Amino acid sequence: MSTYDVTVDMTLDVDVSMADSGYSIAADIGEVTVIGTVPQYTGSYVFTPTQSTQTIEIENKMATADITINPIPSNYGLITWDGATLTVS
Image 1 (cartoon, one colour):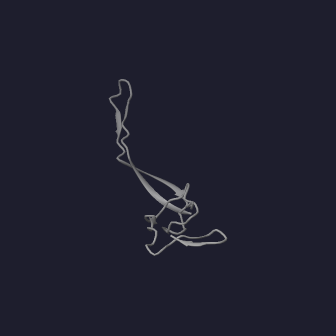
Image 2: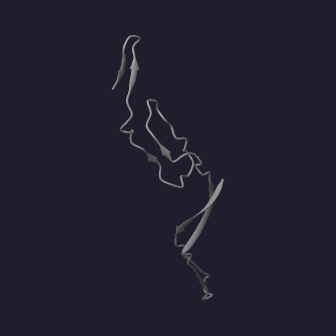
Image 3: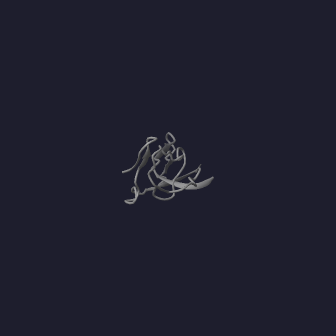
């Protein structure tokens, strides 16, 4: 599991005054860092289409690169056999 910093810009205005004392406090927070953990996807990032459905198990994980789906190679053909005839298409 990896840890990643996430920066959230926010402003916090505080105005505290004490009655008749003349004192006041003002505060301003310009940047807050929230740290959490997200598991990193460690599988393949390159896929080639097949006859079957492919599921890339990436739910609730963080990818660290683009996922590439290759085109079907131009030299791929579909070969079918019906018991009597072999067909290449």
